[in-house]
Image (cartoon, rainbow, N blue to C red):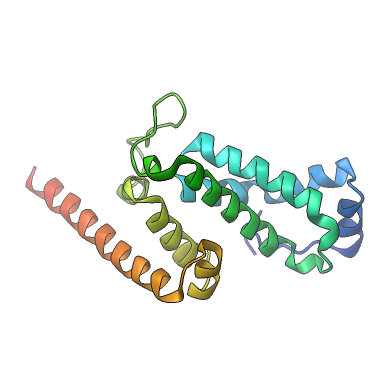
Length: 181
C-alpha cells in the first residue's frame, strides 16, 4: 500500500472522533491524507494556489460532514471525491479563463526540470486533464468520472481518448524536435 494513498481505512474510533470534531483526530487524518489530496488537486487544477484551495476546502467539508460516513474503509474514497469536486469548483468559478495560463502571481509555472509529460498535462484543458488523471492515475471508472462531472459516460470516454491522442502527439513532436537539434 502506498504511503498517504486514499485507500487507507480509518478505524471506527477515529471515525467517531471525527464526527465529534476532535481537532487532534482531524490533524492526524489530515497528515495521513494530505499528500495524496495535494497531488490529486494539483494534477486536476494545474495550479498550486488553486490546488491548496481545493485541498483546504475539501478537508473542511470532509471534517464537517464526517458524521454522515458510517464505514471507515470508505473514508479515503469519499475524501477523494470531495477533493475532485473542490478542484472542479475552482474551474467552474474561473469559467473559460481556466484554460488560459493563469497570472504568474497566483500559480507557479511548470519547473523546466519536470518531465515533458508534466508540461503537457499543464497545457491541457482542465476537463481533459481531469478525465485523464482520474482515469489513468486514480483508477476511477468512466461512470464515476461522468457522475462527478455531471456528464455522460460517452463524454468521459471520448474526452479520454482524444486527450491521450493529443498528449501522445505532443510528446512525439517534442522527442522529434530534440532529436533534430
